[in-house]
Length: 410
Image (tube, rainbow, N blue to C red; front, side, top):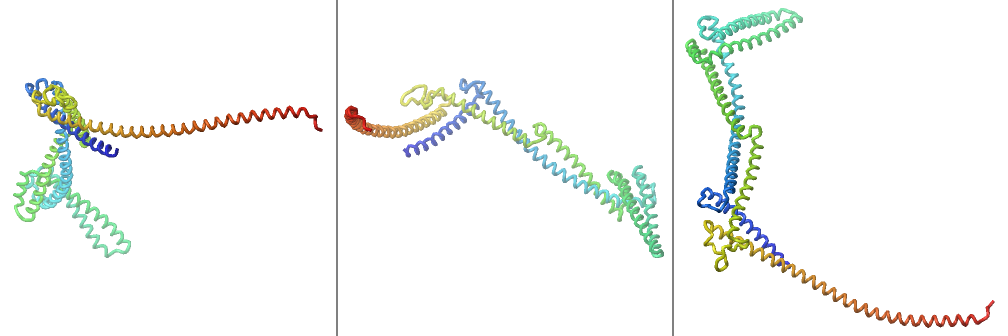
């Protein structure tokens, strides 16, 4: 019995494998027929036009969704790269902006000296820049006055008492704060005056003519380089924003602008569902086509000699039908072998039940004979007991009658 079960288990696994292989072959065979359906003359009558249209629609949908996933993934990766680059670029621009302002301020001190000596020579820089230089000149004068006051306070510090020294210290602190504020204002004014000029290539060339060499020329070169680098970064930022807009537009076109990962998951789910429909359609097409020529056991429905499995008249897909026939026959054989073993297993089980029942019947028959013998013995004992009882009753009655004849005893 154990060997039956082991064989059944082994054959069941083999049956599952054969069925899986047949299912895979059905899908391959069906896909071949559906692909061939583009040629009506070749596939005349093999598959309905409706089924061919359904298959083409599913394949087109799958291709479209697959391309969409690839495009979204590429665009999403590109978006992350661009955003990271934008972050780095903004940081660099801030650093370069600070450097440009600093270098413009340094060069501006040379320009301010020139402006103070010969204002007319800088008429070409424009009204706004000249106005800023004028304010810078006044600011520098205010700084000079504050520095002079601070120096005088330091000289007076030694001639005052304790209270006077504290008072002068407070005045110096206030002056230092005012000087620092004015110096910051001066740097801002120089930056406002020079940055617009340095951003104009024509004006920068004229500045080079005014400062052909020396420290002023070196400061001009450094400032011009900083401004040029800032301009280059601005151009890169514009290009970057254009690239970002293009990538976002691509994602928007695929409805993935808000959450590209979720959109790709939705598309993959749809692709899996489409694949399931394609597998079902291809498998069904091949099976129905095979059923026109073969029965479930793989035998030809066209008749023929020998075992009835001739394929000479089965047309375009005779080779595929021959393979289907082989799979069906193998499945049919295995299925019958399993059924035979299952019946053998059931027969063995029934034989055991029958033997058990027969044993029980024999035991019950033996017990019946035994109980019948006991009944006969008990019946004889009952008859004897009844006879003895009748004798006892007769004796009792006689004694009672005799007793009545005696006088009462007091």
